[in-house]
Amino acid sequence: MLKISPKFVNSIINAESLEELFPLLQNAIELEHATIPPYLTALFSFKPNTEAEIRKVIHSIVIEEMLHMTIAANILNALGGKPDISNPNFVPNYPTHLPMGIGEGLIVGIEKYSPELVKNVFMEIEEPENPIVYEKTAKKSALPTFRTIGEFYMALQKKIDELAPEKLPGDPARQVTSSFFDSNLLYPILTKHDAMSAINIIVEQGEGTTTSPIDEEGELAHYYRFQELYVGKELVKNPTAPNGYSFSGPVIPFHPNNVQPIFPNTKANMLPEGSEERRQVDIFNNSYSDLLNGLHRTFNGEPEYLNNTIGVMFDLRLTSQKLAEMPFPGKKGYTIGPSYEFTKTLSEHEILS
Image 1 (cartoon, rainbow, N blue to C red):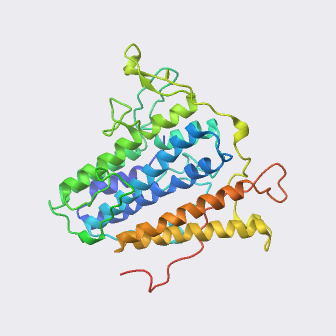
Image 2 (cartoon, helix red, strand yellow; image 1 turned 135 degrees about the vertical axis):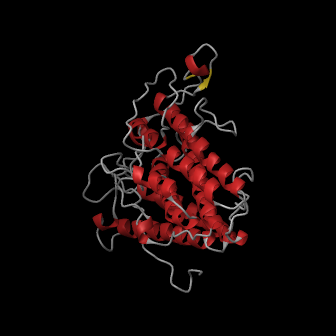
Image 3 (cartoon, rainbow, N blue to C red; image 1 turned 180 degrees about the vertical axis):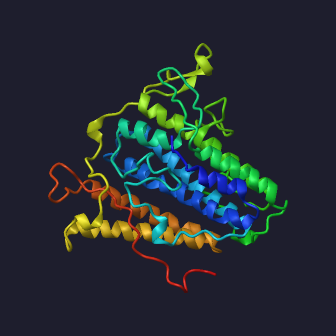
């Protein structure tokens, strides 16, 4: 599982004011974002019109990670803070530890899809403290020297309940909503109860509950959806199996030949200056920066600007797929991967105070 340094949870526990929670919620925004590029790269590495079932699963998880990032930003705004997205330090330098991760723990890179990537990275990111064991899986033992994502969010929830007034102090006009998300999942965070309920959404969609792999919306949590991909079968209700579920549903097919051989952890400086390959990577990185800058504006007083980011997301997908088909100069047998490098910061007059 993703091992979070206990100092972050301890900082929440020891906080005596809402302002002390601001950097920790910023950490949460950074963590939710940091999972998206690895998941997107796996999704974009499939050849066109292949692996529809796997695409569907990964796409659904990416959308929910975007939701979690937005919820975290809404909570920070509701408490009176300001999300910081237009910042080179916001973007991980893959391969890397995820934000708040312990140094000797999980390393996350930008790679093509494979069952091994799902098991060794994606499931590790999403694994709850005590995953429910189903047929064809084995439970891991937990070490007491670190915290989990769920523990971090639960500590945050408890501290908000302790410190915050019922009506939260942030400007309601900064709250982001969108028809892109179910209004039961993304809603204005105006009260303490709103914040606590929203944190439950993040935890249950990622980890499930302690007794079920299903969240309150009736969907499998991320950990178990990824587990389905690794096992190659759907996790379904089975009254005769331990814990009531087993991997005995329909087969989820996977054909390795449908994956583009993208070079892991591509960087722009690996490609010749002036080449078409470098130009396409630069186009990707500029679009990625535009997306983050757009999200910064969205989370800092222009919630309606979220609609402007939809077209940028489409551009990222098209450019990434084009890169995945381009041979990597000097690396025989490989194509080019997206590099997710921040290139353009908003100017001072573009950043709202």
